[in-house]
Length: 428
Image (cartoon, rainbow, N blue to C red; front, side, top):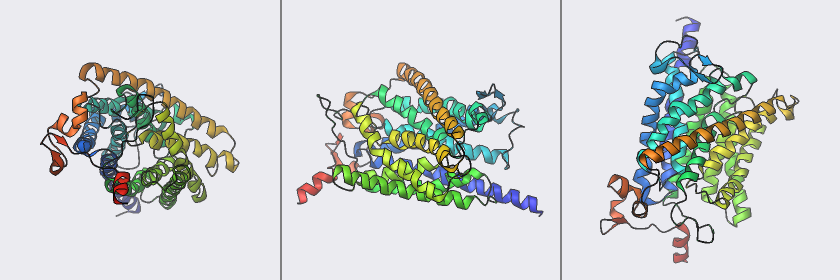
């Protein structure tokens, strides 16, 4: 085997292994979302995570990949290669085309699943799947084309190595529109606007999900090299890990400072915020900068959540602060900390300006298109379950099952699961 053939084989295997790691992140999202929500909706949560990836896989294969990487129409969207047909000869990722399609498919699935958690516990299942199809076929691929597919933001020099904005903020901004349209869960806010916490039923599951996501993120970021022969993989893995650790530590410290105790949920989401923040710049920044970027993600988590609460926007798992706000910060941070082009490293403000333009453009585009898509879904399918279904839980109301049948009361309504705080009070 020649050196070139060996390198091609190594790169292909690395890309596929990374794709499989990113796929496992679906399990992480399912566990995080199930853990942070109530027991009566756990089955609905895991089914949504299974089916949004299934829907995204088909929609992205049929339409999304062509829109993202097909021949560019004015730098806005691709127009060739639907169903992986002709017109993709210009796509040369350095690995076989179908391996590249598989890698990009798991990214599309990630963007779709972010919406699930934010809108959990009151969104109609069919409407959510319909929106997932639209996001995976059109909204996410158009943004991807702008940055990665030869579109206008990429031509301006925007850098988003593995998708802080392209993947994570797209999902988060769509989720933000969704929670605004579907409304808060019953009881989330009092009649005078007071915030009423709705604790999740299983922090152990949520923690397991975070560990799975952290592990899968090494494939998400380092796999975006598409080359196992790329020596920069070591840097990418290290910066990814440091940012996650920094995000968790910073969020934990802030929760202790503000709330008077080191919060478990805050630390878990802080790790995810750090991971999201570093995703744009993991290949371009130093380890020290990665610590600062991850800390920024963790630092923004609590005020981002409080802002949503003040606006009476109910994000059941914190997806918007984690994936949207931290994603925007991480994208801007590339313009600050890029080792050659960053403002703080002597590169001037040019890259920062382009990054800011990209963040704003994606926010506006995803906001408008998601709003239109959700309105269509609401008109055709209905967006919110009935009050009775919400009270009984979506497991029973939407699927006729219970994830925890041993806790059922009179075979109709799952018993409420006490919060950790109430258990601690009872035992004291």
